[in-house]
Length: 86
Image (cartoon, rainbow, N blue to C red; front, side):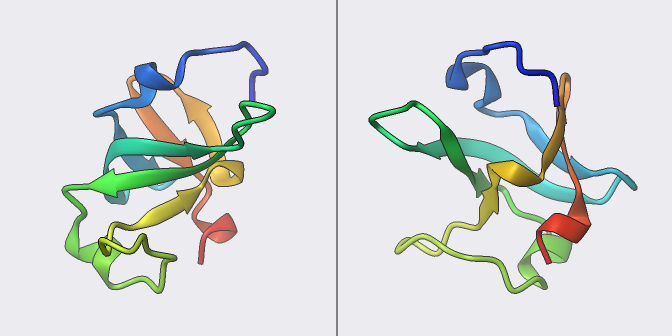
């Protein structure tokens, strides 16, 4: 992934999709390491049935979490490598 720095706020509301076009949901928040600013996970809202069928890590509010390490592209969408998630 391009190492160009972007503000996490640019991720808010973006649709999260797989490389094959499966939709997971929309970014509602990010989890990051406070000391380094490293993005760790994306918190999803408006999750799809496909996403709900996966055994993803969840917040205490039952929001789906996607590891940021699975992100392969950022643009109009956040594209993730499904094989890095499930």
